[in-house]
Image (cartoon, rainbow, N blue to C red):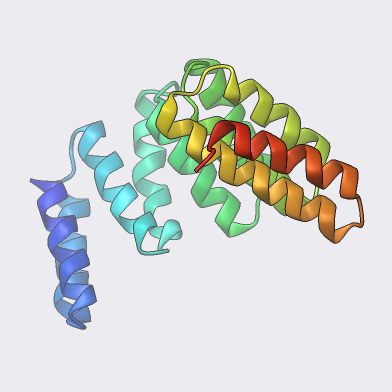
Length: 174
């Protein structure tokens, strides 16, 4: 069971047993046959900031199922971390088209826009995400609105910052 190997690898890495961890990750990759297993292993890689190693697994999933929402979001995240902003944006937008009522892709796309410094696009995509987000996703959206507010504040736009911070508080008043 591929995810079990991946989880064992994460545990071994935390314990400093890197060689054993790498063997378990190799076994996870080798035994991951089903898309859900490949996605789970890819997610495990990404949880350890090893996004580049998740890409081949996600490519396999998307080759057989180009509309796999989880694979599109994880691929976008991996590509964004590698610095390919346009390709990451393409994956996030595809994920939104596949599942327009799931907030994760909206959150990830807003992160990408914030990294680019594009407050207007970030706010627009967050507003779209807000319309479909569940309670848990609203907390993620709130943190992204805070990041937009921070960006406005850094640029000296108190009005923009206040608007974004108010939106964050509306989504997550705690």
